[in-house]
Amino acid sequence: HRPAGQGGGGGAVVRNAVKPVREESSGGGEGLDGDGKTPATPRMVPKCPARILIVEDHWANRKLIEAMLLQKGHILDCVENGKEAVTNTNTIEYDLVLMDCNMPIMDGWQATEKIRQRRGLNGSVPIVAVTANAMKGDRDKCIQAGMDDYISKPVDRKTLYKIIAKWTMVPADATSSPFQDGKGTAGSD
Image 1 (cartoon, rainbow, N blue to C red):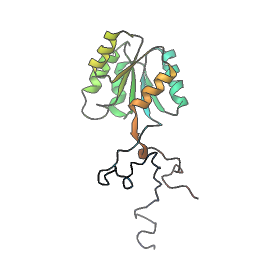
Image 2 (tube, helix red, strand yellow; image 1 turned 180 degrees about the horizontal axis):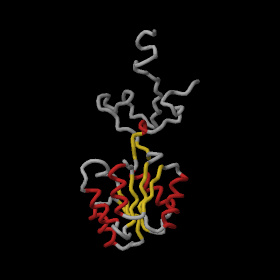
Image 3 (cartoon, one colour; image 1 turned 45 degrees about the vertical axis):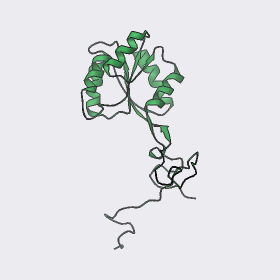
Image 4 (tube, rainbow, N blue to C red; image 1 turned 135 degrees about the horizontal axis):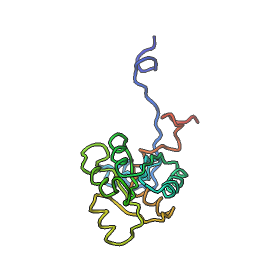
C-alpha cells in the first residue's frame, strides 16, 4: 500500500507542466501586465486540430476543401445539405462550420438560422459561408442569416487557411505544446 500522493489506485495524479515561453514581455511580473497586478492577455493561436463540419452538396467542392483541411491535420465531418448539418450540430461539438448556401433539401441560410436558434451545443459556433455568390447583397444575406464570415468559390487555399485561423483562435497554453509527449506529461530531458 502506497501513501497518499505517491501514485497508486484512486489518488490524484499530479504531472509536471511546461509553460510555453512568451514571445514578448511587458516588463511586469511573470504572467502579469506591466503594472504587476493585472493578468496578462494570453497569446492567441489557431486551434489545430480543429473539429470542422463541411456542408457542401457538390462532391468535387467537398473533396477539394476536405483535402486542403486534412493537409493541416484538422478533424472533419462532411455532409451534403443543411438538414444533415442541423442534425450533426445537435450531437457533435464543432470549432467551425463551413456552409455552402445553395443546397437541396435545406439551404445554408435556413440551416444557419436553425443552428443559431439553439442555446446550447453549437448555438454560437462560427459559421462561414462558402458560396459561388460573390455579390455584396449575397454577403449581407449570409450575415443576416447568422453566418460569421464569407468566402467565395472557387476556394483559394490561403484564403481558407486564413479564415480557419481567424475563427479558431485559442489561448496558446490551451493547445498542445511542442514540449508535451502527447500523454499530458512533460517529456524527459
